Image 1 (cartoon, helix red, strand yellow):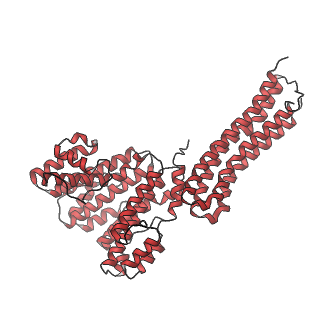
Image 2 (tube, rainbow over the protein chains, first blue to last red):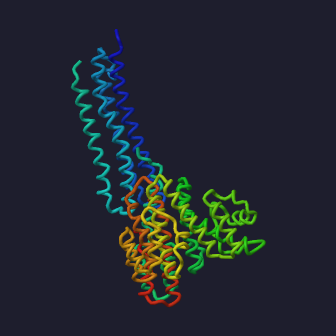
Length: 158
Length: 325
């Protein structure tokens, strides 16, 4: 039996986790640099800047979620692996791509927006609520991509 | 793609900007009756160190040192700030040329800036040994010309003019070569304002057009030929020429008073830097912070010396610069 279908499906799960995770690492890294800059001068702002740093971390979690759902869908987690044709495997791969690609890009840009918003906290900590909204806007598109990936993976019929 | 190498530094500068003096702190200083009261206020605001004596020179010198200590701690490539150090470096060249022509050994103390790319002792050694090739490329020619001019003519002013022009050209070239637009804006602003100052001072001392052209450095926002011709015809002609340029506000400041003009020169630089408040990933906020701190120290020095010499609040206020924040 050809294993190509399952290889494609696993590649999809891997890409969802890899790309979205990479986006989050870049984003959290950028925001973390800005957070360190502020805390080195004013440690009292630690809690606020930490929240800002964590905002770009969600893409990695979304990628992980889609990865889990995909592994479960193809039966890898339950022990009863589904037989997949190459075409079915490619369908799973395509379903995983939205969160992978959008997670990578939005993670980086959310990190940059968080870093800029950390600048607001450095100067006007009372504006924390408003500052948090700017990076949160980027999150919208990661959630939309997550939604499509989950809907696509769960509704595929094998 | 965006470059994020300044993210840490800019965030740290944002936190430090909260400690910059606002106009209300300046008002507080102006409201003090004596220099001592001013010194106490600035010390309470964290100026100087615990062991810095309560006198203006010591506190201001310490604050000047702190600027570069802070920038050094940010871990960024310091070569981008070379353009800011050119005025001090070329000042040292002037001092070294004069020392080399007037003294056989040693150097006049307290006229050099320390911590420059070429140390004062090395600079003096280079000039004395006439080994100008050891100087940076943009200094060597001017150093040779200035040294020979001073030696043969004894004209200190001409020597200064040669080095000052080389400094302006070096700043302008560094600006043109810089990747960051803020360095370009800084260089353009410095050179244009210096040219306007040369025109105003030359007009007051009735210098020739040739002298002015020799002193002025070309830049994009001013035509030095027209400016020099205007300066030769009178102050009104300078004001009229500047009115048609981006330095129109400077024209009205010249008309008002010499101190208003000096104030405008510094305020214009702070205006140029205002846009850096909204940058998060470039070297701009760092450059703006350095200039803002220098502007702040200069303003405090003006207030302190005004208080020390019993000037009225109005005449001090006329000289107080706009703050960055």
